[in-house]
Image 1: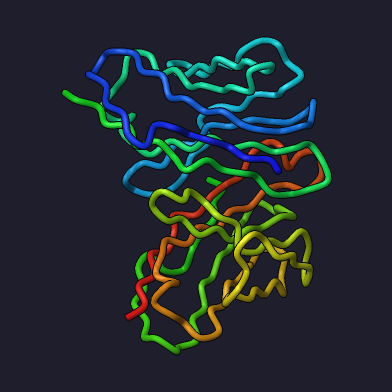
Image 2: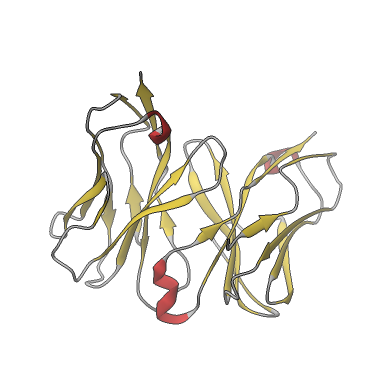
Length: 115
Length: 115
């Protein structure tokens, strides 16, 4: 069965510092997609970054980047120059390209940003 | 601005009541989903729909049903609410086919309390 594991229920980071959130997944597929979603206190989940498994290059979106290690089945999110607005729940998610419509989510990591 | 709208932000219902949670999207998405979010458990899929009048059970469908009479609207129904259905309910939508891997768009969530 495909699973997504986020082993850090909560993390803290000082404003302007860098933090890395961990995500591992289990799959026998060779082609798939991985995502990081942010859920701020206002609740609406927002897509932060997306990675296609067949692409070697790590995805980057402004201050957010990923470290995608396909062999290790690891997909960590790095937030650089952390800001107070980055405080949120972060969810890692996985999807196969076809055969199912659903995404599989991890249990989330709550990120606190300290001023 | 494209959006997924959930009709209620907070809802309090009594045990045994029939409860309707409504979700409307304006993006012409084929797929719509209902997730339940609980602390430490992440997001769990209740039901999804890939077309009008089509539905499939997710991971935790017991005690729930759904209705999709129009493409833009997906309703979650709690036939007889119970206290263990107290939770945050998230609606999401996505394109069908390969475009479904572009990511979900989420609503703001409905926090349901059953007393």
